[in-house]
Image 1 (cartoon, one colour):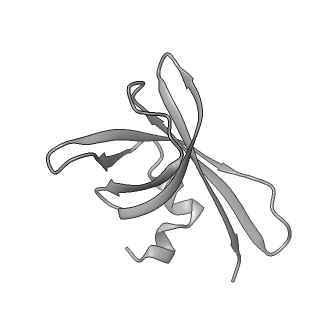
Image 2 (image 1 turned 90 degrees about the horizontal axis):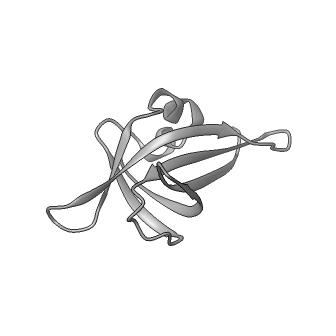
Length: 101
């Protein structure tokens, strides 16, 4: 899948509740589950949405650019920001803003 197509909200909505892998070594990866795809307010002619990922509680809550791998979407570099933690895990958000064609 091309990079531009993979950044569309409907593509992520199709993969809600699926697993993305964050490699931490050549043999180990952390699993992040896509638990939310949310449209946000945007001016006319723009699209804005966020992705919410749930990671294990033992993941370091650090903002950064992470390379996530998905079996159907391929590899994407996303800026993830920690937003909360609860008994189920640590949550990260990626925000997308783009001009519609």
